[in-house]
Amino acid sequence: MPIPDHSALLKEHRLRSTQNSRAVLRLFTSAQRALSHGELSASLAPDVDRGTLYRILHRFESHGLVHRVPDDEVSVKFALCQHCSPQTHEDQHLHFKCQVCGHTHCLAQQSIPEISLPGGYQGQQTEVLLRGICPRCQVAD
Image (cartoon, rainbow, N blue to C red; front, side, top):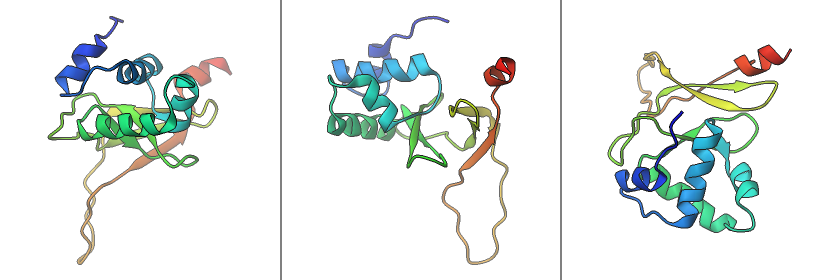
């Protein structure tokens, strides 16, 4: 797998390429899964404080670089976007959480089917979290 140019990716999303933002992006690209604020904070401490990390994640999300991922144990996880921009988030896809390793992965190739709501209801966002065992953990059994 080619090594991503983090500075170019940040520039593409109209974000400043700071040492801290490159460090956060490096964690996302190396993990290739959704990460919680706590996981990111533990990996970046003591170089990046929690407040700075919150601001970086907020900027990344508002510029289409990451999206929020539903989770059943922590308040929120974030995953690197595949085809998003500051104008559009394409994060209406399934998410899979492994019950063995606890990692959450985007299944971007799987779209969420349209749901017909009863009269008077107006949906704004759909989040689907599937739970099971990931391929890596199945092999480990």
